Length: 517
Image (cartoon, rainbow, N blue to C red; front, top):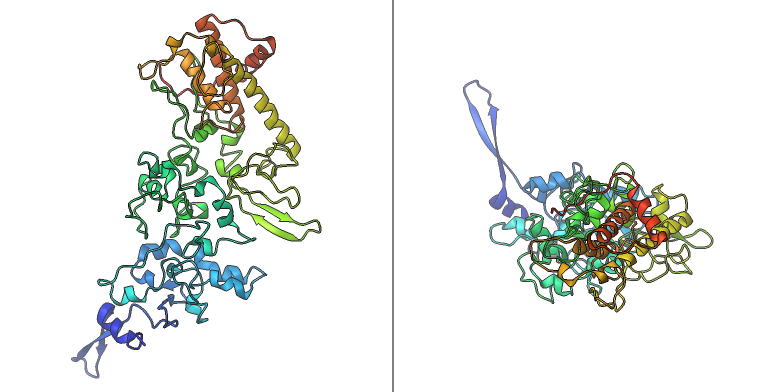
């Protein structure tokens, strides 16, 4: 057995030496005794070398004897109490223990190991080795062996072994299944291998952009189409722990694009520049009331909606997009605990079971029959699913009316075609649309707002039908119509449209405009 001389090797490789002075029988004689303390104990699982706790009663991991900071962070979070959490749950079962202990689940070991092989208390809780794998070789020869690294990967639909997916899955916590069906899991698009896109479309690129220096198996790999990573678990969550809820790397209650986790990416291009590029991931600033273009002379005070107000909606984006839904059958028996990791605020549902459909399924009608509106109701914003659905439909109708008056893309080519398209923009001289001329015309500003709040006019709009900030959207579009009419001498809109414009601009302070003229 390779572990037969564990203790002697420990003494020679990494002992802690303490000097103790003992008094002898006389006052003139003292002796100094060197007491050597090993940095690790014999692993109960001698086959695989999982060490587990150095002191189970105090919660001191073997790894934490050296990695003090990680020990301190980890000890404050749920993984450190995983065993007690299971035992106190009221439904502990033997098949649960492997995910609440150090075992072969969550790392690269592919056969029974740790607690799944030797039921010892040193393996209680989800410790360092649960993700990093066995630590014996590293602590025995720390200078000669590479440290065991955890993988940044999550489940890839064909491979769940060795990742968070081995435990964070199943009917009670289907994080993996729901994440896999969401756009966060995508890694095959051209954006994942484009260096300028990687800060939001590739896991390693995101961590680098955020200044995260943690080491992991794939960190130094050259990204290509075969090994690109999506926005995996450890991109948003810090496995070692953080000061934020859910071990998130950044806060979700911070109403700023610099500090909010979701807005690290969902705030890429939300204001108009002279390049005339269309919006891209503008949702955060729309929520906070700082997106869009406004004509000169309009108030630029930020105007967040109720959804973007931390007082009314403390979790901001996550308040709607990450919502738990308990699914039961017709007799009330538990079927599924949806955990909101499809990131759909009002997901399409299976008409028979009521279960949310995969995140990629979003083509169903916006009705209370075909979607689940729990996120709208549970937050206390809407009295019922019906009222929430009616509010969204009303907002969508108003925005469509205003956008169509600005620009109706008759031939669906995402470009303003004079003599073909409808709306004011199709009546504006072509000279008003010139890219990179260091000018922003009224026509260009209005087109940006149509891109931002319209449907199908560009590839990356806000796409919330006004839900993120209905008043900002309505005011920006109404201001655009007024400016177009004035600047280019266009005819007045129909009375029904004019009524919407007047109502939108009468609702208090006009939202911010980050485009400077």
